[in-house]
Amino acid sequence: MRGNILGIFFTILSGVLVAFIVIAYGRSDRMAPEFRFSALNLVYDSQTKDIDLIAGVNAYDSRDGDLTSRIVVEKVVLNRDAGTAVVYYAVADYSGNVTKQSRVFPADIEDIDSNGDSSETMEDELFPNLAFGSEDGYVGSEASSEASSDDED
Image (cartoon, rainbow, N blue to C red; front, side):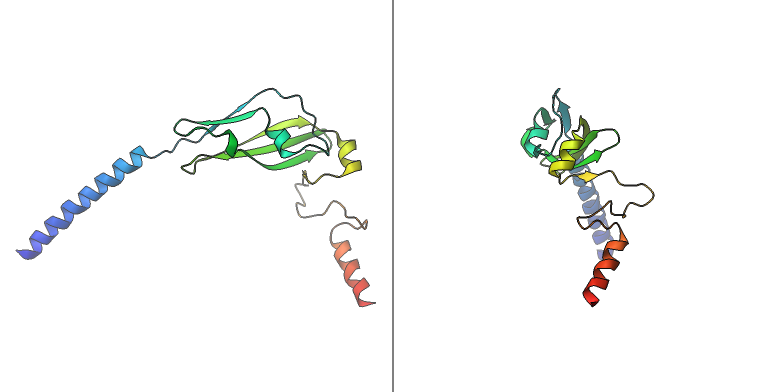
């Protein structure tokens, strides 16, 4: 008799907990924020900063409102052949929902080459870990093997 009462009690308790979980999940914020881009006449060059890239970009969320101050530039990838820079943006709302989008800008490749740039370059799809060059002129594994032979002298 006592076992039946405990079984009924735990069954009812489990049902109530499941109901609370379903209600809490239904009320949670699962909608990701959205980006809104304004026209921006910008040419990406060696002097371009993240703040310049964020100008003209806004982020909104249905629950949290304006999230523009939370926008970050994840990375910039240069496409030297096309003369463009692809800028990757991300924003997260206060519930942890994340949205990522990209935008393409024309790039001044000559200025970037002459003044340097810390952005990434488009990787070779066949050999993504192959270095495209270094200060000492060596490429890929040649640079490490040459450096190790210099240390032995």
